[in-house]
Length: 154
Image (cartoon, rainbow, N blue to C red; front, top):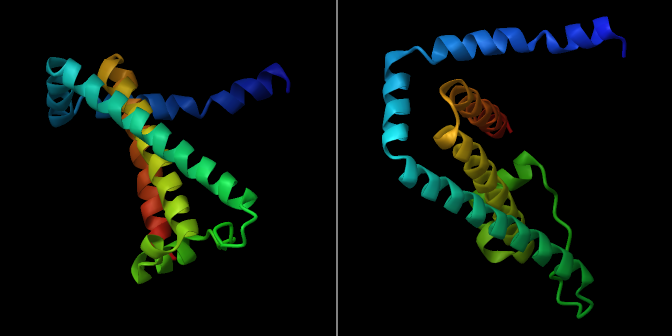
Protein backbone atom coordinates (compact mmCIF):
# COMPACT_ATOMS: atom_id res chain seq x y z
CA UNK A 1 0.00 0.00 0.00
CA UNK A 2 1.44 3.35 -1.00
CA UNK A 3 1.76 6.27 1.38
CA UNK A 4 -1.17 8.16 -0.17
CA UNK A 5 -3.47 5.14 0.02
CA UNK A 6 -2.42 4.50 3.60
CA UNK A 7 -3.15 8.13 4.45
CA UNK A 8 -6.67 7.92 3.00
CA UNK A 9 -7.24 4.56 4.67
CA UNK A 10 -6.66 6.23 8.06
CA UNK A 11 -8.54 9.41 7.16
CA UNK A 12 -11.87 7.96 8.32
CA UNK A 13 -10.66 8.26 11.94
CA UNK A 14 -10.93 12.06 11.81
CA UNK A 15 -14.78 12.17 11.94
CA UNK A 16 -14.76 9.61 14.75
CA UNK A 17 -12.38 11.74 16.80
CA UNK A 18 -14.43 14.88 16.11
CA UNK A 19 -17.64 13.13 17.22
CA UNK A 20 -15.87 11.82 20.36
CA UNK A 21 -14.71 15.36 21.19
CA UNK A 22 -18.22 16.76 20.72
CA UNK A 23 -19.86 13.96 22.71
CA UNK A 24 -17.33 14.47 25.47
CA UNK A 25 -18.63 18.02 25.97
CA UNK A 26 -22.24 17.00 26.68
CA UNK A 27 -22.95 18.01 30.30
CA UNK A 28 -24.42 14.73 31.58
CA UNK A 29 -21.54 12.79 30.03
CA UNK A 30 -19.08 15.13 31.78
CA UNK A 31 -20.90 14.47 35.07
CA UNK A 32 -20.67 10.72 34.48
CA UNK A 33 -16.94 11.09 33.85
CA UNK A 34 -16.53 13.10 37.04
CA UNK A 35 -18.40 10.41 38.97
CA UNK A 36 -16.12 7.73 37.50
CA UNK A 37 -13.07 9.76 38.46
CA UNK A 38 -14.39 10.14 42.02
CA UNK A 39 -15.08 6.40 42.32
CA UNK A 40 -11.95 5.18 40.58
CA UNK A 41 -11.23 2.22 42.90
CA UNK A 42 -14.79 0.88 42.68
CA UNK A 43 -14.74 1.19 38.89
CA UNK A 44 -11.45 -0.68 38.62
CA UNK A 45 -12.69 -3.44 40.93
CA UNK A 46 -15.93 -3.91 38.98
CA UNK A 47 -14.33 -3.84 35.53
CA UNK A 48 -11.40 -6.10 36.43
CA UNK A 49 -13.85 -8.47 38.13
CA UNK A 50 -16.04 -8.54 35.03
CA UNK A 51 -13.03 -9.16 32.79
CA UNK A 52 -11.73 -12.01 34.98
CA UNK A 53 -15.19 -13.59 35.34
CA UNK A 54 -15.72 -13.27 31.59
CA UNK A 55 -12.36 -14.87 30.81
CA UNK A 56 -13.02 -17.77 33.19
CA UNK A 57 -16.55 -18.31 31.83
CA UNK A 58 -15.48 -18.07 28.19
CA UNK A 59 -12.48 -20.36 28.59
CA UNK A 60 -14.55 -22.79 30.67
CA UNK A 61 -17.11 -22.97 27.86
CA UNK A 62 -14.41 -23.47 25.24
CA UNK A 63 -12.59 -26.14 27.25
CA UNK A 64 -15.88 -27.93 28.01
CA UNK A 65 -16.75 -27.89 24.30
CA UNK A 66 -13.36 -29.31 23.33
CA UNK A 67 -13.59 -32.00 26.00
CA UNK A 68 -17.15 -32.88 24.90
CA UNK A 69 -15.91 -33.38 21.34
CA UNK A 70 -13.23 -35.75 22.63
CA UNK A 71 -15.79 -37.67 24.69
CA UNK A 72 -15.98 -41.15 23.20
CA UNK A 73 -18.46 -42.60 25.68
CA UNK A 74 -21.34 -42.12 23.26
CA UNK A 75 -23.31 -39.98 25.68
CA UNK A 76 -24.07 -37.41 23.00
CA UNK A 77 -22.32 -34.62 24.90
CA UNK A 78 -20.33 -33.69 21.83
CA UNK A 79 -23.27 -33.21 19.50
CA UNK A 80 -23.10 -30.32 17.07
CA UNK A 81 -25.62 -27.50 17.18
CA UNK A 82 -26.46 -24.76 14.72
CA UNK A 83 -24.99 -21.49 15.96
CA UNK A 84 -27.04 -18.85 14.18
CA UNK A 85 -29.03 -16.02 15.73
CA UNK A 86 -32.39 -17.65 14.91
CA UNK A 87 -31.23 -20.97 16.39
CA UNK A 88 -29.92 -19.28 19.53
CA UNK A 89 -33.14 -17.30 19.86
CA UNK A 90 -35.20 -20.50 19.53
CA UNK A 91 -33.00 -22.29 22.09
CA UNK A 92 -33.44 -19.40 24.51
CA UNK A 93 -37.21 -19.25 24.09
CA UNK A 94 -37.71 -23.00 24.33
CA UNK A 95 -35.42 -23.36 27.34
CA UNK A 96 -33.09 -25.73 25.47
CA UNK A 97 -30.12 -23.73 26.74
CA UNK A 98 -30.93 -24.97 30.25
CA UNK A 99 -31.48 -28.63 29.28
CA UNK A 100 -28.95 -29.37 26.55
CA UNK A 101 -25.22 -29.31 27.39
CA UNK A 102 -24.14 -28.05 23.93
CA UNK A 103 -26.42 -25.03 24.29
CA UNK A 104 -25.25 -24.41 27.86
CA UNK A 105 -21.64 -24.41 26.69
CA UNK A 106 -22.42 -22.06 23.80
CA UNK A 107 -24.35 -19.59 25.95
CA UNK A 108 -21.68 -19.71 28.69
CA UNK A 109 -18.97 -19.01 26.13
CA UNK A 110 -20.97 -16.14 24.58
CA UNK A 111 -21.75 -14.62 27.99
CA UNK A 112 -18.09 -14.95 28.98
CA UNK A 113 -16.94 -13.25 25.78
CA UNK A 114 -19.39 -10.39 26.36
CA UNK A 115 -18.29 -9.95 29.99
CA UNK A 116 -14.63 -10.07 29.01
CA UNK A 117 -15.14 -7.44 26.31
CA UNK A 118 -17.15 -5.15 28.58
CA UNK A 119 -14.64 -5.61 31.39
CA UNK A 120 -11.59 -4.86 29.25
CA UNK A 121 -13.11 -1.79 27.61
CA UNK A 122 -14.51 -0.80 31.00
CA UNK A 123 -11.02 -0.71 32.47
CA UNK A 124 -10.08 1.92 29.90
CA UNK A 125 -13.31 3.80 30.57
CA UNK A 126 -12.37 4.00 34.24
CA UNK A 127 -8.63 4.75 34.07
CA UNK A 128 -8.01 6.45 30.71
CA UNK A 129 -8.09 10.15 29.87
CA UNK A 130 -11.44 11.65 28.93
CA UNK A 131 -11.28 11.28 25.08
CA UNK A 132 -10.30 7.61 25.41
CA UNK A 133 -13.21 7.04 27.81
CA UNK A 134 -15.64 8.35 25.20
CA UNK A 135 -14.09 6.25 22.41
CA UNK A 136 -14.14 3.08 24.53
CA UNK A 137 -17.75 3.68 25.55
CA UNK A 138 -18.62 4.04 21.87
CA UNK A 139 -16.67 0.87 21.12
CA UNK A 140 -18.91 -0.99 23.58
CA UNK A 141 -22.20 0.68 22.67
CA UNK A 142 -21.97 0.41 18.87
CA UNK A 143 -21.59 -3.39 18.65
CA UNK A 144 -24.10 -3.86 21.47
CA UNK A 145 -26.71 -1.90 19.53
CA UNK A 146 -25.87 -3.68 16.26
CA UNK A 147 -26.01 -7.13 17.87
CA UNK A 148 -29.30 -6.28 19.53
CA UNK A 149 -30.76 -5.13 16.22
CA UNK A 150 -29.52 -8.28 14.43
CA UNK A 151 -30.88 -10.50 17.21
CA UNK A 152 -34.27 -8.81 17.06
CA UNK A 153 -34.42 -9.17 13.25
CA UNK A 154 -33.63 -12.89 13.31
